[in-house]
Image 1 (cartoon, rainbow, N blue to C red):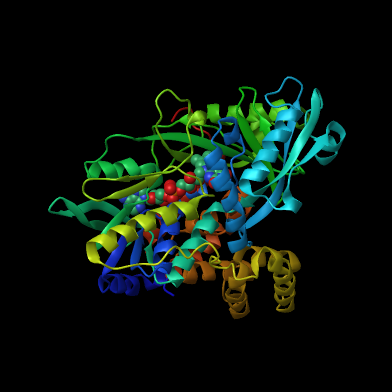
Image 2 (image 1 turned 180 degrees about the horizontal axis):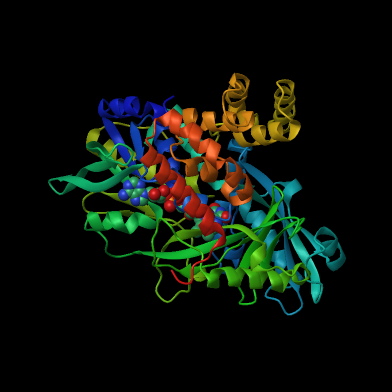
Length: 550
Ligand code: FAD
């Protein structure tokens, strides 16, 4: 399997020697899903991602694989039913990245939903999403609710709905899907921008790509080209001169992260904001994170920033629901901002716009996909690849079978499904401890890497004293370089380990040694090393410094 920037030249040679069926532009979860679906059906497919994989919206979400309970309010029954059912599939195919999380939906005197509506709503959710018995909703009275989460506002509390959602690591989910696609024969490059499209007789037949690592440009041709660039979808449609009819509406959402010593939330909560929206507060790895906002966005797509207004909106919402915590801006440890690529709907406010996905096929044959959720990635991919397969059948007379991904574990997911995973963790943690890793680290590694953890353990065993890194950090970094296409320090700190979000202090402690190690691995000159160091420092600064205006 070739998925390492140390093998970039070999990967490019292989690409040049391949007759491509499909080029996918964009390496977020949508592009990764399409690559996996296409590769498993036998198509020759390549993905070009201009930044790192998942560094667009797919690492900046609320990190939930969820059915979108709130969409019931808008009577989007089909979205809830389809996406709701997908949750279980995403979970089964990668229990190391997706975990059930009981969510509490408190209701208050005079609130939008009383116990009756909450009960009906959650029952409908269970039914639509086909929720298994052990995970069906329960209704709690006020005492039971407060027992589960004493920090909730007492006044007017009448009870809560209690139901299961799934939490995930969005960036790692994207990567594990991409790794599986590569294992099945796809090629996938990060730091490769598609700067132009190539046409013949009015039909799009290829792309011009710029390699941002070595500065070279190349042309690649394929039978079909899919634009899965999320917030950038309209930019490609503009190049294609097909940006007409429906267009994107970008909206921004931010999240704040607190240490649980300061905001000791025990229980995930989905709650009303003073202005009638709903946001999440979720405990995770010794931290509590809260979000999100939903405001129209017109700024830089690659680097959306949190404004003071965004920050204060979330702080106010926390204060409204958890008044005893007395949260302040100084308590914020980290934050992130992401952009939703929604389809514009006349006269609707950001949070009213549908999250459903849509496919556009232009006169030139460029296929664009936008909208949707992390959760529905597999179904979106299936629809796109069905479309491509049908076109190829008509035009070339070749046939490809149906989608193969429903029961296909993603990379790291060969752990015997959700039931097998418990035993798997037990055994592997013991194995980790037996080679000298402490139990907490062993658990973290097994949960992060799933069935790929053996390779990480092997690196741990290879560690020698002349390496100026903690052995566990070394094992993760080396695995990430050799098997997960790490190139820049932020690839490691933000998207391979999520430390930037949930352990930013660790990032500042490790950054110097990690960068030193990477500079040797990749032969960086001083200038490059300096640039990447500065990029990371800027990110660290941005996490706690909101801007005045976008
Ligand atoms: P992206 O992840 O943005 O990927 C597109 C990629 O294309 C980018 O990486 C970009 O660099 C690349 N690209 C662009 N132009 C080019 C080019 N010319 N050449 C090469 N590459 C290019 N969904 C859920 O299911 N659960 C949630 O909890 C949830 N919460 C959310 C919270 C927020 C605040 C936001 C913003 C979204 C949330 N979503 C959630 C939605 C979900 O995150 C998105 O639907 C999903 O990540 C979109 O993925 P994508 O691959 O389409 O786009």
